[in-house]
Length: 152
Image (tube, rainbow, N blue to C red; front, side, top):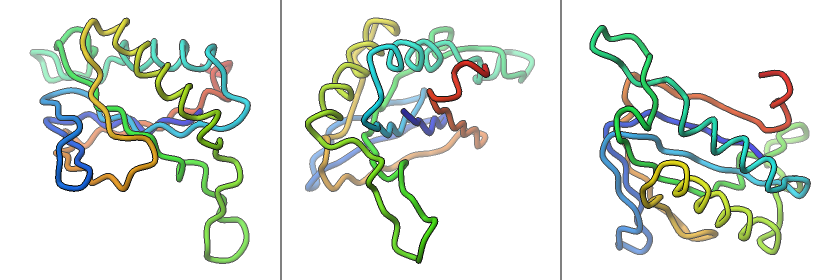
């Protein structure tokens, strides 16, 4: 499971001109899922997301978590995080989980983030052509891979 996590001042997702999710200060999380991913990966990554100390404190040091600032989460499914660009110029996506596997895990991540943060996780629509607007704060962007969790 891979996540690109961006600290934002605001972010929104729309599908066919309709807003499906919107947040103020918080985290925009692009989530890619592959076949071997499990609930263990979700639990680990969700804990990391809500507890990352990447928001500025009164002394402008990255010392506060999403929980400390009462921030929002916008979760977006993104199979392209598993793009293979090894051969040629057209990416391949064979490592990305098929919807039958990915959708339940995506929904589970959404629920886990809600439990941990105590607020509704905003989201896009799995598999839809989504338009994402964001105001990156910092910019602060982190890439996390649950395959590396033993190295953290």
